[in-house]
Length: 270
Image 1 (cartoon, rainbow, N blue to C red):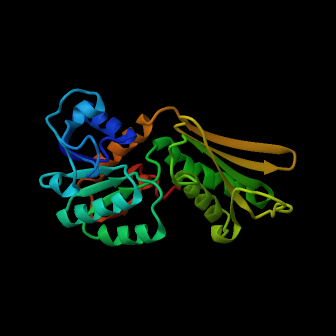
Image 2 (tube, rainbow, N blue to C red):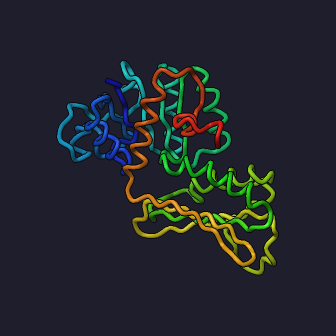
């Protein structure tokens, strides 16, 4: 059994991970971590997740949960995720990072830290979304420059980063497929007298409302027709199942920074 530690064990994703790990025959909930001031520190992780006692108490520091662990699953916040990656790298424990909002500097540091351990990092662990990246690249290359591209994402009102990491990744995939520099052609929302839309523009728009788990629509608009490709997440379980798939894969891999395309064997096709 793979001994797994859940960082952010009391969060929405953390609780689902604990529950699904408990149900999986090839995983053991080996540890659970929350921030020092969290009310659930000291409680049983299974009881917090609503699946009954597991005999695993939530601790207030990642270092307390790492000895003997094989993989850490992290859905926290950027600063916490980077601290956890630092600790996992020092301890030689593999990691799966689904935390969104990591900066360019964070990813640069992550590449340094994963010289010692294998780590899967992806803003979206959904299998469907990662398959979609390859589809979008193919569609964009086939349609070429004659179609306007808009990315619209919608999430619950608790989400802190905007646009979503998934929408941003989609915009980068589209720009790369068309040979464009997203730093020059990317537009994030519009307001005021913005003028006629440049043909090379790739726009990303964010919606925050209620309890929307996650929706991403990519619109290719041509003269006389429109193509829309949409992915809707119905529950957080699809992200959690993807994270478990990544955790199974990453244990035993060579050190390095991977993503879900590597896990799914789609790297050469994306």
